[in-house]
Image 1 (cartoon, rainbow, N blue to C red):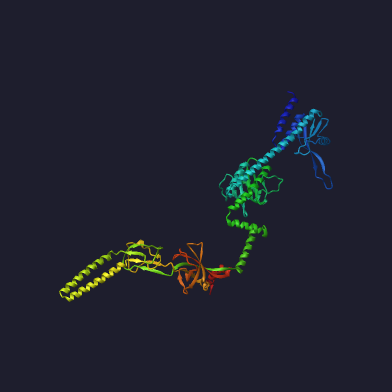
Image 2: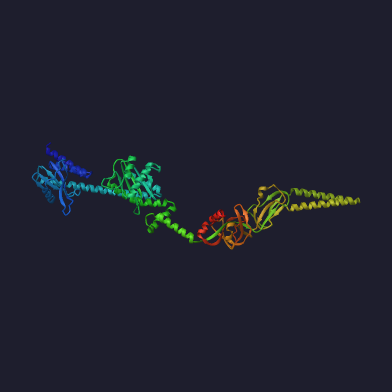
Length: 603
């Protein structure tokens, strides 16, 4: 095989390689210059660009040619500038065995390729070869543009998918874990962490592929410190960082050293234009590129507002109300130290209200429903309970049978007394027939005694059935548990209270009695029905204090203004509030404490 044919085959192979080249410009241009040498047969190909130097004071901008690289490498010199200027103007220029042609690449600006020792400096073959070579940078640049566009479209699609993932979450915790896992999978990261700024502290909230983590560990505190570094600067940070940036990544470097992470990247999450959280991405195989940083910024803009909304909804309502108050107050008090300023203004308003404000003062006291007519039902004789027909809470009308006693003993006694009366009657007749006056008088007396005992026995039998003396409710006495049990005469069996004469007994503490001396209106709230208050009218105040376990009380008697409901029963309890007029707000809050201090410190 001849040398020329070998060179042509090598050049064609290199051309095919350049048409589908996917590397960086640093890799493309040396390969391109080698291809130029292989196709044209030149001994050296040099890539030059036209640059402008910084002018001095009062001077003009100086324009010159600079050699970037050549093939073979080494010994790069700037060719003749006249030849380069002519090639720039006409596209191609030749001089002896030197040839220069313009490549017109946007990547290098006004680029010129200079060839040395070209075997055919002129002719149609060289022109064809140069036309083919000039098309290679353009095709490569077009391919790179299309590839970048494809990558950007894929990145935007991923950002939209991430936004859908965050929008589908219902809680802040689940949202942070879902977002971290999605970003870790799309960006091929070893670990993705998310921190959130709550009030004044950055707290780690989620780590990809980790449901639980120790928030008190040293490594978590280092992660939070690195996130605070990003949050304070409000910009994306990388480690290792380029030397041409003035960003501070000291905490990132410290965390990377302690956790043995080669590559870090932190992206701030924003809501309403302000940072609210930080993403931290970790890799061990490759650094984060500028295109990936741009994509991460788009992703952060997608999920930041959604996570902020979820965080606001997950917080307790007092915290949400306080944050809303701070945001509104910042319009008038400024954005710095809004919370302390609001607290100071609120404290001042409260103090002014306590000094000059007035509020309605009410006296609270426990109360019970009482009946004005209560009847006690007692046992009429010593005996045994046979039947009890009512229990506590039942309503009984007057004349209704309440309880019956066992009458078996009285019936036996009644039969015995009837027999005695029959016997004494015969004795009276026998004595009268025998004219025994004394015996007759004795028998008559015994007959009268037996008749009296029989009368008493019959009366007790009649009293064995006890009836309700009034219309009312049974408030005491549960005899169903005492069936067959003995009772003594006078024992209280039932306590019946009338429902037509109910009143409210209010126990007012001694320290508040002087506040309601001239008051006639009150309200009662029942423990059994706390959703409605009933107006009362105070009838009278008992002038004598009654000692109780909690202290001395004065009893008030009150009645309902309207007819009381049917469900009111004696013994029901509740709380009564008696309006005592308007008082100073500070006095209402502090008078009990001040009164106690006066009692303790008087002399």
